[in-house]
Length: 256
Image (cartoon, rainbow, N blue to C red; front, side):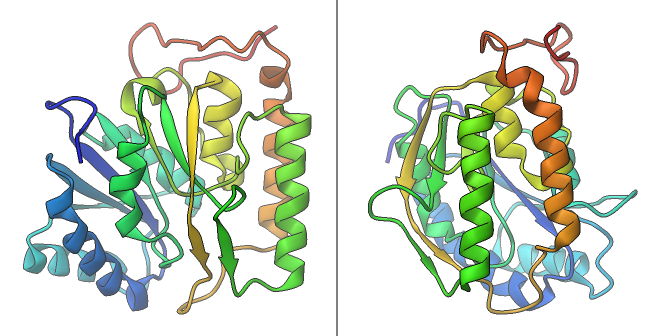
């Protein structure tokens, strides 16, 4: 594969909370993919003070596997979206990949995500394009996802078939132009609505988690609706990217 630029590298941001049962397999799969990246890569694991020892185990395993793993322990309220936003603050490479730790996102797809940039701002691993599939979801989960996706696409005018995907690659320069707050646990939706980027999508098989508990609950749904309300004004703007004057995350303002 060819990187978009020979000087670029990849930061893989992984939010974690009580993922000890999954972290060894995840890092092993990332280690097997690393030789195909043809560029420097770092794994930024942002842990919300997991009581099961996820952070400690990840650091130990990363060293043993020869991976460049940085474990960042986050303080404050536990939040998947907040952990991702913090990872964006501390990542160092020119391309940024965001993925979950629950084994629902296959690391072997990362090289294809990068190859598919092809001049776009980012690439989304999509569950809703031809060739994609979702494994082992109950009917209730399908229904919730369908309604939430419909809201994102129709109400917020998100130009993406899967605007709520948690698995994507973006150019860091694009992400630095918008403020990613992480509330609602849908950082991709924030990027799509605030920056109106050009994105490509590739299909993949979404695997439902095998170990641990799902993070989806009633609170997540309420927080998502709050995010939709906050993004409403952005969705009615002219769609231009708001560049931060000082290059930091989080200086954009909603349109009047």
